Amino acid sequence: MSAAAPKAAIIGVGSIAGSHYAGYEAAGVEVVALCDVNPLALSARGEQWGVGRWHTNINELFAEGGFDMVSIAAPTSVHHPATMAAAAAGVHVLVEKPIALDIGLADEMIEACSAAGVVLMVNHQLRSSGAVRKARELIRAGAIGRITNVRLRQAHDWGGRTSVAPGFSVRTTSGGGTLLDNGCHLADLALHLGGAVESIYARLTNTKFDIEVEDTAHASLSYANGALGLIETAWTATGWEDAFWVYGTEGALESTNRYGPPTLRHLHRSSPGGNWDETDVTEYRFTGHGAHVRHVMAFVTAVKGEGPVICTGEDGREAMRLILAAYASADLGAPVRPTEVT
Ligand SMILES: NC(=O)c1ccc[n+]([C@@H]2O[C@H](COP(=O)([O-])OP(=O)(O)OC[C@H]3O[C@@H](n4cnc5c(N)ncnc54)[C@H](O)[C@@H]3O)[C@@H](O)[C@H]2O)c1
Image 1: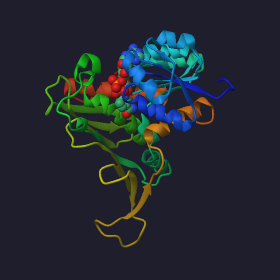
Image 2 (image 1 turned 90 degrees about the vertical axis):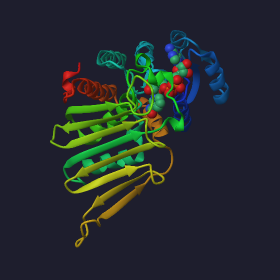
Image 3 (image 1 turned 135 degrees about the vertical axis):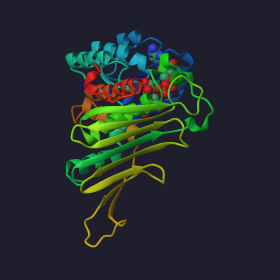
Image 4 (image 1 turned 180 degrees about the horizontal axis):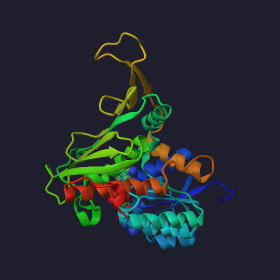
């Protein structure tokens, strides 16, 4: 990276791009260029953020250069070509989830960034939430003993809307429904918190919206260490839900956004004389930036060589492999090993 202050560009300036911009702002990185195929979106974001350089073409963006890192916040089909162009230009990449809809494409992105010596980080931002970071630290320190069960839930109702946007509801553009869209984050968490998954068995249903992809899904996990897990995703919830529970032989970790600001509760039996339903509880509260902003800040730190890549291209690929195995299992009506997905 140049010795001058690092600069960034953003490809795709739609809804999630706002979190990327906020992250760069918090990290003190200037966003110098925007790229989007929609000129109206470009001018709206350009004016909102005070960024005067706009491109409607990715090749043009990289040909002009002038930045060290790029956020790829365009639709998933754009993740591969944009990452390949960034690697060819020697630019570090923060790519949105899912990394790609296909394992082969993800491999090419990983190889290209590795050969170019640039960072490739995937925006599974839940890893950067205070609750997940603390939970992983406690798990690794043995605070809950051996993990027995992991339960993960992400669900919403499209903000109360009565329809699902075509980009999400039509299989050719989305690649899948809630199991892919929300589930890829949870697949990443399942691996990040619980370790290797041996097999997955998913059940999909469509209960609310008249669309061709699932609006509700469960996926049962069998971990290599014998533990069980459950991924729950839905577009049929009420409001927004982000929650995880990790149970161990010596304690449990619980986090949900449903009852107030995000916290992590560590339940344990440290005090003598506890009864059936009373346990000791250590509660952690987190202030400051949310997960999205923290994740972009972590990317900038990794680009500067001052910290680890919190979610690598390989991590993003393995989350996607688990989701592809889940879809295969739903088709088959039987568990599928992620190792069978290539
Ligand atoms: N990390 C998260 O929690 C999270 C949340 C939402 C979306 N996402 C991911 O972010 C990506 C974008 O989702 P969104 O909800 O912001 O979509 P969006 O439709 O709001 O925005 C996407 C933008 O990309 C632009 N675009 C389309 N093709 C392009 C191209 N070839 N080059 C440049 N720009 C192009 C569109 O014009 C649009 O402005 C998807 O991969 C999605 O899965 C991640």
